[in-house]
Amino acid sequence: MFAFREAHLEKDAKTALDLRDESGERVIAQRRSTQRAAITEQKLRREIAVDLDALVNTVNLASALDLSGHEQVRRSILNHGFPDLTRLSIDEHRVDSIREDLAAVLLRYEPRLIAKSIAVERDDTLDPAELKVRFLVRADLNCEPLNVPIQFIADLELDTGKIAIKGR
Image 1 (cartoon, one colour):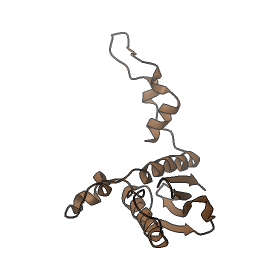
Image 2 (cartoon, rainbow, N blue to C red):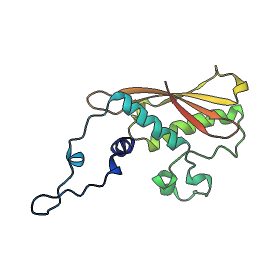
Image 3 (cartoon, rainbow, N blue to C red):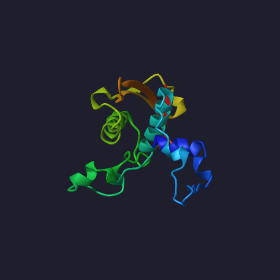
Image 4 (cartoon, helix red, strand yellow):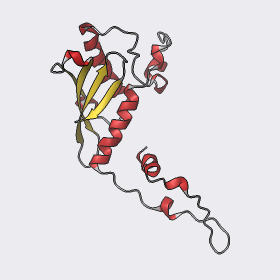
């Protein structure tokens, strides 16, 4: 996805190219034939934050349909996303369940994170008047030659059920 986002940010596809050699044969544009550039750690962190925000704010299929008896669908990409939180009451018991759901969704649908490294904790220091529940998420991105540790904050807005992902 990085290549597409980078091209979009640079407005790379705005100029139509129809390059031809002397014989009239089509030639691959220079912008398309260059070697892939390595992604910087800062860009990698930004990319993962964008993808995680989209993941946790996509309502999964199981929120709309009963998938009991359809275990393969429940575990597949067809069920990509997070359980719908807008119809649930947020009490202390449910908040712990949301923490578990968050960890499970990251484990299942974000393959760039090393499964053993995913840790989700509730941040109890947030003022209850803010109408948010905050989770601190730590994990390692699977990278070569070294894994990259990431941390981010997932703020659940109690009135809308939306989760905002912020880097840390």
